[in-house]
Image 1 (cartoon, protein in one colour):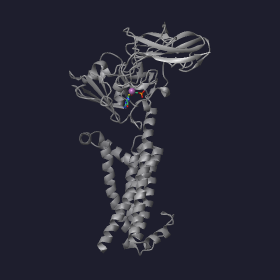
Image 2: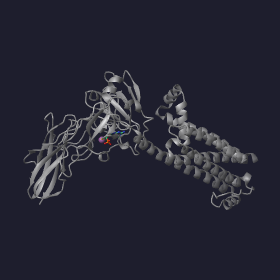
Image 3: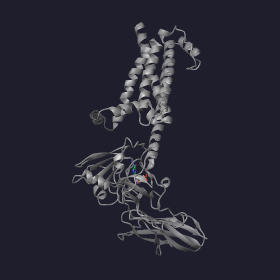
Image 4: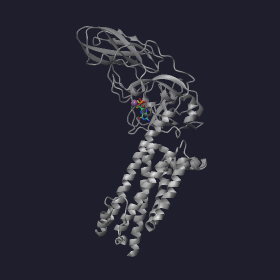
Amino acid sequence: MAQTYAMVSKGRAALAGVVAAAVALGVAEVVAALIGPQSAPLIAVGGVVVDSIPEPAKQFAISIFGVYDKVALLVGTSLLLAIFAALIGIGASRDRRWGYAGIAVFAAIGIAAALTRHNATWLWVLPTLIGSAAALFVLFRLLDLAETTSPAGADTAPRATAGGWPDEEGTETRAAAMAPRGEQRRSFLGWALGTAAVAVVAGLGGRWLSSRRTAELARKEVVLPPASSPAPALPANIDPPVGSLEKYVTPNPYFYRIDTSLVTPQVDPAAWRLKIHGRVRNPFTLTFDQLMARPMIERYVTLACVSNEVGGDLISNAKWLGVPVKDLLDEAQPEDGADQVVSRSVDGWTCGTPTSVLRDGRDAMLAVGMNGEPLPVEHGFPVRMVTPGLYGYVSACKWITEIELSSFADFDAYWIRRGWSAQGPIKTQSRIDAPRDGAKVTAGETVVAGIAWAQHRGVSVVEVSTDNGATWQQAELKGAVSADTWRQWTLPWKAAPGKHTIIVRAADSTGELQPSRPVPVVPDGAEGWHSITVTVS
Ligand SMILES: Nc1nc2c(c(=O)[nH]1)N[C@H]1C(S)=C(S)[C@@H](COP(=O)(O)O)O[C@H]1N2
Ligand SMILES: [Mo]
């Protein structure tokens, strides 16, 4: 039976070691979230491994673990650490000096790794130091508890402790020593597992905070290159002074946002890669620096969501800076029949764009800049696709990391699998912004104003009816830099007292008038004329 007790004791000692290691990493992640994400020992050691591992070995790891190669690395490192931590726990249960020595060795490795990282400062020793101190504390407390509550150590007096953990340690352990064996085990196990759970939660919380910082900090460091082909100058007659009329260029904070991500993907540009592959003769991979070094165009492009209802606001216009997609595709040389370009985001979302559209000369680009700033994190930092004339769900992949040439017959992207149309050209639409629906308007001279869009074809005519469709008047169209953006329009209106229904409709440059019959957004975008009702008095 003595044999069994010794084994249980060993198991507990090992568990104490593993829990202490979890505490070290958890505490370190929290401290690192405040100091610098790369200073966390697990990340720092992992970084050293990634940097120093020879390229063939890296390729081997990637070929086995795919995109999870980094996860595999961290899991592998954690497992190794757990094994050594268990041994340290067992050693320390015999002689506390093993605990000091073991944790000191790990602290030294963590600190050395952190200090060799890019941009490291002396502060970067703190996550490992504080984590190790916490680990020492937890290891010795758990061992004390295991000793006094295990049958083998039941008759040993509790150690004198500085600081009481568990609370009122003397009383707690003495009581535990007198409690039945089942309760004693629960007391140790409870503390061990409870502490481990807190450590894991702290670690994940710290990691989450860190990752948030990674993208935001990295974004601040991005310096946008000048465009080799700058955006055209804005027309002088845009943004007439009508209160609720949408601005021609949407400021970034007001740009509509649509995506499937619960937590905004955090991408470190230093680790970002764009893989262009699939049915191409020349697959290749680009780093962020390589992408930034290529010739860039700067263009105003109005993005629109297929889910935008008639009169809705899921549409915005920005000045984008990026690398023409056409150049990248020409270089990759798509095979005949590869009629679909599948873009994949870091979080696995996909969209499929006709290869012909991306190569027909329009300004489709991999954008890195938005209105003169690096792409905001929620709009796809560091790189997204922007395609004039197509709804976002088939063409505007944010946080893009892969471009795979395929065919529409072979692959259905994210929203296509959910019943939306594989083809998503933006339909001609128009919207009344002023006055607002239901507004009370003062009788006399006023202005009806709004926007109209038919991206890549261009808006040619906007007509407005202020008498519920009985008569139509041509609105004055404001300028647009190209057919790829929306246009503002205005119509002076002498408002007579009473209730009025105002309707708008637009035609694109092919002369085709937008259809009046309402059509729901599924499967390829809403149709119908926007109308509002106002009361004039
Ligand atoms: N990675 C990713 N990219 C995405 C989406 C998404 O869910 N995930 N949504 C698309 C849709 S439906 C639209 S309308 C546009 C919206 O871009 P924005 O949020 O910058 O306005 O992004 C597209 N790109
Ligand atoms: Mo969308």
